Image (cartoon, rainbow, N blue to C red):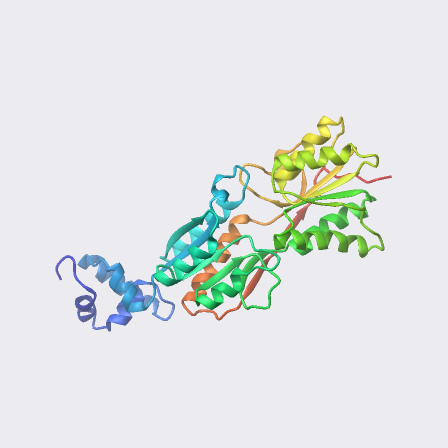
Length: 341
């Protein structure tokens, strides 16, 4: 067979249908391993290279997924976005798909509408869900397959991958309460995001479970940066009743609390307890802080892998939506907490 052979001639040579050859080259689960290897060897010997457009028409898919995200997430120095993107990219590569990055500044709805109408992607991953997120109804109306990174409080069906924000924040707060702390401040995310609302509810739930009531204005809704951690901690540490502990929504915020403690002449782990959720972000590890920070941890790239894998499975019909997955976490106790006597 000459170089540059097409799918039809390759199928004739092998005595197989074109659809079988096509599926074998895609690694389809329904094709036996022995057949797949035979097809791949013949294709390599023949110099066969699939025509991407013809392949897309033949299988009814673009074999491309989109990631829709605010442009600012690429511009922030303190973010877990790169780790999530790494996980998505790993699975996309393994599954022989392409990834289309679709950033937006203000009008995400227009981006989603364009992706749906252009048929350039088989599905999309969307991020940063609001407490009640209108994008779910929009995407269902557009008929575009999607997976949400996180959860939202809507009745519309949707598929998601999320970190267990509820249980992790309740467990962190419970740890501090069981160590005798009562004046605790939660340095949380912005209130319009569902994960921040879930964490706030979990904070209060930990108090209620012990017959206690959280201090007034104990939950601060701020952005996930070291600067906001520092500013929030400085303000509370200057108050007439000084908190004895902080529970932070990110290691970045905790790093800011550490700086504030030092500025006030306090030693973390002796004068002040600090715990945090979501260890594992690039460039800021719990063990980098002194003393090492008590924190929950979930491999952040696992979120990206779960999102991409779930979306491709939905696109290919391997699973039926809606489906959800909540990632487990570990709580690692280190030297940043002390018992109140």
